[in-house]
Amino acid sequence: MDRTERLIKKLPEQTAALIHNPSNIFYLSGYTGEGLLLVARGLKAVITDFRYVEAAEKQCPGFEVHAISAGVSHVKLAGNLLEKHGIGNLLYEDNVVTVRALRDMEKAMPENMTYAPLNYAVEALRTVKDAEELKAIRHACDITCQAFEYICGYIKEGMTERQVQLALDYKMLELGAQGMAFDTIVASGENGSLPHAVPGDRVLRKGDLITMDYGAKVDGYCSDMTRTVALGEPSDKLREIYNIVLRAQETAQAALAPGKVCSDMDKIARDIIADAGYGECFGHSLGHGVGIDIHEEPRLSSRSTDVLAPGHIVTVEPGIYVPGLGGVRIENTCVITETGYEALCSASKELRIL
Ligand SMILES: [Mn+2]
Image (cartoon, rainbow, N blue to C red; front, side, top):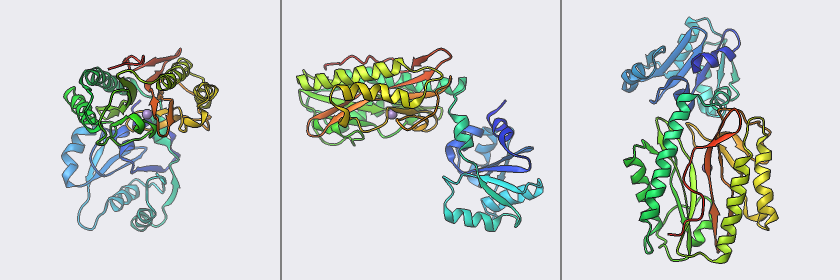
């Protein structure tokens, strides 16, 4: 059954879903342009404008394509379609639609329309990846790993973080990525204590650890990987931190399996880091789902009661961050299988000394 049919099956009678979130629109229809998706039993429509009509017709077989015109806005057009189909209930994404857009929608729709939140119904479908999605993410992970091998031979003392970022990004594009999954992070030396450091003009020096967190986008899907490498021999302290993070990463990753509770995965890594005396230095969650968006459900966090299932794709990325000294993070993207998991990032996690 196609993705839109799976959503429609969840909708109550005489009810339509109006989709604003571009990632949800892409997931359901393959459409990458601007506009809205309107779906109900017997109704699958892309609502767009002149610029995207041809693209929408190509990308979305099985969908009607409607273009706005003077005086007929996207929501007005949606309202006309709902009226034509005799549909009086509309579910919308209340996490995306602004207060202003909701007011405009209510004005443009037929008067007796009732509204309710869609409650993340599409996001829930998106947590379990199908074969086609897994293939794209696998490809994105392969590009990420190849770029890692390349960058390990490229990094030299005296380069800036920004140069490393540019080389990584260029290499991923050259290897076939359609773009970056997110802004590449390169954090060297003391900058390593910033989990989301922006690569800058800091010059790489002997003894630095360099954390690179980056991913490729392929066919609309992301990969996410972090490796921390050393430029020359690191201090004993940095090596100690590296080994703790590596143990936390490997132990938590090895525990991934269907039926496991997300918060338990987080706890495995957190306990290892806390027992080693660095509990205060791991201030983010263990990981997150990856797909069309770089951060999706399920979350491997201490608060998540979600249960892992085959087809979930999640990251495992513990870290230790010490202000003034630096930091280490090691991250793999993994798919949950029927019996356990498979790591999609094959790049070695042993400390590389460049
Ligand atoms: Mn990540």
